[in-house]
Length: 470
Image (cartoon, rainbow, N blue to C red; front, side, top):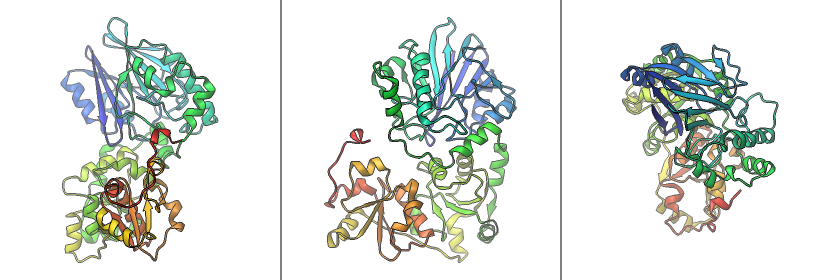
């Protein structure tokens, strides 16, 4: 028996490859399926099952394409109603895979079709659970993402309590927990950076698995402090339930190389959003007017999903040479299939063609401290998440979280300088580019973010440990 976790950091997502005696099951695969096919072929094994723990909201799964390419059977748990052919397993059903068995445990709560897969080894011993978004390391799945559910988040949380107590916590302590996500995913509140653990340890350290916890306490704690989910989540659920375009077709369309003239014409004709995926500091020095910077080397796909509300939005992009396929692939992972091409030769080609360019003033934390020292009434905007801001911030800073920046535009001045920062510089440049595109011409990005500011004498609020914040 072989079990391999295939973890994708930019999505904080874990897919799984299970192999036994020439047969393979893939759990929650990514949309680009070639690696799974190659892995099975190299092992001279056949992919028998594609197991889905639920209809994912934060990424588009590769289940449909993988089943077509391999002949495998797609399996969902009870209550799932996909529009394509799939086996809807019953609670307790056992699926044979070579010399091992995969038992279906229906664990509703995150969503009503949520299912945990229990792996029994060659001797029938409980070896591991693939818990999807039901149980994470240090957390559990949020109960407010069930699309088209008639249940409230409190009712879903109550289902989750029962699922954990009756289906998962009754398993032996030495069972390995393999979740669908780790820290950075929006599918939970406070996941660990660890991507696997023993169930016994989770019973000790995971707040949601406390033995003396009542259902009422669980519901209150799990639903407390939930931020609104990203807008693209329901559209990803729809694609995972109803199917989607073939990834090869999406990649071919998105990798069309366009000259500066063709690129400009395509923007004007299609109303496409211009997405610049270069590094923040490179973008600041020069960019196409009205383009938005979301750097490929950060949490690219989640921020695209959070800030571009429509997955059908036409997108044209600028990338570092050689990274064009990576950009299109990572957009497709979260359902943005309408990528129309990229600027051939990159921004340098745009400049060489004599096209209009724009820039953003970017200063060091020391320069910011000097400006603040001269006039502490300067406008400072902190675009970090609420928990980061509440823990510690510049005394006079206004809070405008990047996720909801558009909701704060009316509060921000267009006529005066506005100093923008995040934690390290990635998010502040995204915010600065959005504000520039909205006509805020006096934005100033603070390089290094709050981490660098904290090393200056700029006055800050007293630090409050994030674990004490609600």
